[in-house]
Image 1 (cartoon, rainbow, N blue to C red):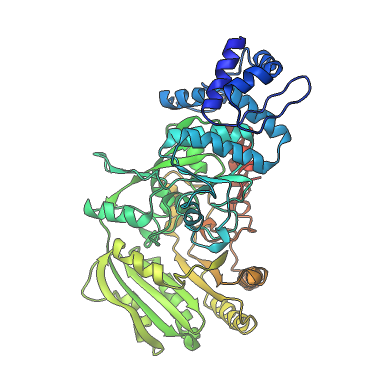
Image 2: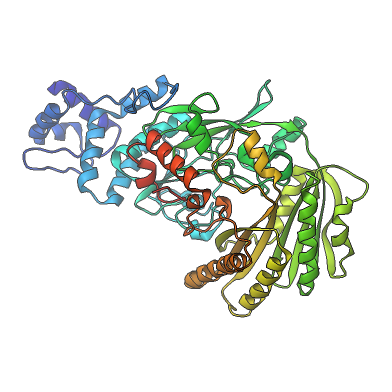
Length: 569
């Protein structure tokens, strides 16, 4: 028994992790020790460790009740790596969890993982660390984590989750890093950032199912499928990560055709909080499959998405800039085009509003010699300043850089969002824009504030039902999803900027409520950190999400240790 304990301690020390053990009077060793030091100085500690770990709790198989999960994927590499870390190390982590400051816990967890994943754990001592911190789209998410870990596959994610869970360390998950909310896809020095960038597999099977790693971005995915003469339903911005967009619902260029992006996922590979790896689909773990379709990062870490493919979507597109002083006519044309979308599922549309200009994206899922007649009212407007992009026949891939350039800057700035959904109503649009004009005049020097009307036809809801339902709780009607955005430079203006963008969202909600046009739904991908997204999915969906989270994560690791991200609580 003592010899086994010594071997475990030697393995820990050889792996260059910290040892914290206890004798009759608590002895904490937070220095790097040599094997001889343990033998000569710490014999009482060794005896104590041996006594405590004569029958260490099993690390594998996992501790989740077998009835909770169907068909967990057992992996011999995972078992070997978890065993290699050693029982003494696990005991040390558990001991420190009770007594040590969160930053020390995070640093110890980072040291352990650095031994397991050499060269793929970045700390402030590494030259590459700051570049990794600043990878996030918004400076509001440039937080200095204890370390950034870049696992290469689901097994390595599972190993990292075991260390995180046992140590009680806070953590965050990053796919593309496009969410601007502070603490989303980021964490401070008390936690670990799991960067999924290396989970970049992409493969089209003979079954025409596209298997995509969570670290992929939509631009790379679109490049791949276009070469195969296929399309998948995904994001509209190329740098956005696959995982974050899909788990929040995901809005595509042509939502009328195939619904939300998440409705086109047929299987998720998921690492649960107990480090088991499972599939979630209509046959295996179907309740987990459903909640992942809009429920965010509350249930596990999705490491792979299996996507339904479709024939290649050809796109005709025009992007026009208008003088915003003609807002009444532009907004009237917007409402009428949304009515036309109910009859023609090939129409896609957005209206981006910034100070002085309104930019309309007129999209059609078919090549043609001329734009469809549904767009005539926009082409006849006298306020047209210039076509940002003239009418072009292309593909979804061609649209990506265009959307990346509309309504936002490439400069490193701070950003904040607020999301609202309403019915389609011209008078509501007028009222909101007039309030927006007043807001522009009241906040000089606190950034660029804008809003986008995203047209959502009723066919989006029907598509979700055809694909086995999601948890979004959408009303079966045409609607507008408003994305309010503010961008600013100075950290000192942060409080004012948040108040302004929240105020714009409140303006939309108030005007919609007064005119009986407010809808309950809040789109996660465009929501601000303070918004209670899943409370707005409806009580039945909210309860289902909560119960499913408790089933697959009974200890609440993703609720208690995850830094942020629209958690169920």
